[in-house]
Image 1: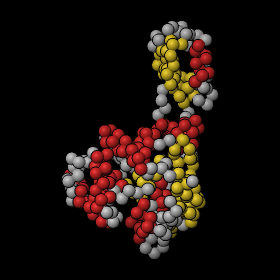
Image 2: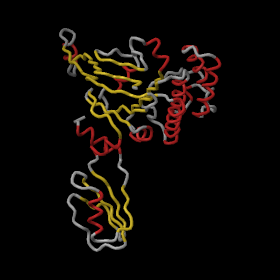
Image 3: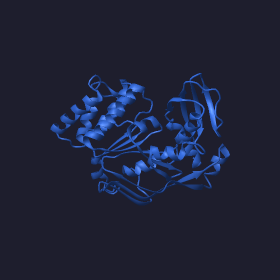
Image 4: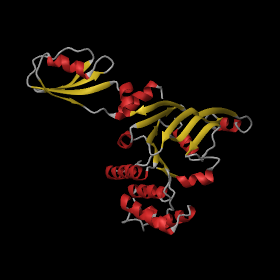
Length: 327
């Protein structure tokens, strides 16, 4: 049974048209022209309870607009949204108690007071009992390793420390759904791993449903295998990383190790990247080759000891996807 249902969702913005320059700016005082942008165009998808889903696309694709409608900030022009039986906009006062939101470039904590004091304010806002608050806070402090700086004002913390505090704040009231918008933006490698591990932990432990938006494909690949791609306001793809790779992986790198090789076989659209006395690194055009067919040709001219398929750079695959849809 679906936990989140989005059906035929639409949102259009009316934007003032204006050319650059002072004269054109003056003209808009007397005559205004507008254009309409379909930020979200007939988007539909469902998400199961406890699922982690990546919602990705280039800048201006419609990701943030969708998330704002899912969180109840924006009202859709048309279409339906149901999250655990709630309409996010109509039932907003009840609904917000069941969701947590983290925006990578915006803070829900108070800048000049200790983080712990911000949590106490959120405790009152969400009306969390003393018992539940203390239990939950202790869990989050331990999982996110906040004990060394929880009594420090937010403005004195590093970006990685602040982000861990923001994630903890979004989970104090034990929400059923967590929206993460660029949760690791600007973080160093160590902080990224800490945040990723925590997200996987709370998903596994508490069955929190998570919708993640990010331009960092390594984040997404580490956390989930399901990806929804949006572009020009339309849903373009909904499937696994394996599905994306099969459809948009244009080339594949293969290393073949051997004892001795006199002459390279001639194979159409297979480029030699590097060669030593015992191995070759090849770049295969997947439109007319398979790994097995290339290995078969090499086995005719040498005794193969080993074959390594170089992992695909998922960023390149996503770039190919964007190019396919002219994004």
